[in-house]
Length: 279
Image (cartoon, rainbow, N blue to C red; front, side, top):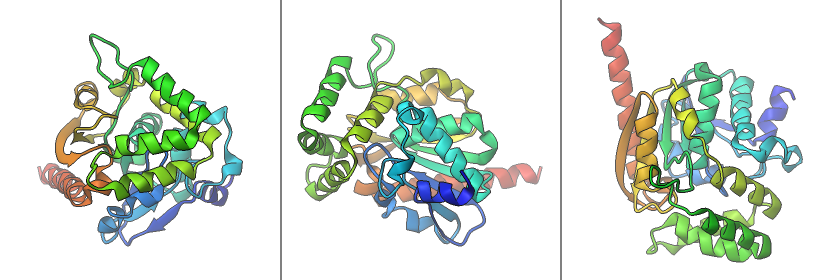
């Protein structure tokens, strides 16, 4: 697949006037439009890259291969393909939810493509593995949700969207997420859900060499505090920030705080690099 085909496949959009690339990766059931409250804040200083994972948004559904996308490695390869197509090196990668874990996997394969990772609501494993690990879900509960996807997809979307979004006082946000779910092919969404929620990438964390920031929301039932803390503890050179934002999608519900924390982290990183260069 040539570079132009890759950009079409993932509906890649590049804006901004900077020299360094900043890549935004959406989460399960979402698309690049979910970044619309955050991405523009970085366009003055970065080349901002937005894209849709295959099967989501306006990606080319003809490129969907159930074998390639049976686990997150296929999606991580898509990220690397995009980097190669755009000639990206030393990018800032911002990933939400499963997009964060996809970025982690991509960085392990090709660390030279990434300068830093910013991980919003990440989880290396959604299933509990008691007593040593809390992911937030029991296997029976996740299997029941997937069974609901098969039997009543719209009912599943209507139930899960407000659970993921949180912030019950702002029903328009969960309504948008529900519409995004419903815009996805149910079979593709079902496979992506299995690849996401039944995965276990805890062993990958120690292989990461790229510095990272973990942004953890309060009252996040999808990626609880323990899941974010586990990643911080087991992933080298990571920083952990507990947000005031609640729910699982702070880039939609609390964009100002999300922007401020990302900007502060990047400014601190630049200051550290300047200090080292003057020694």
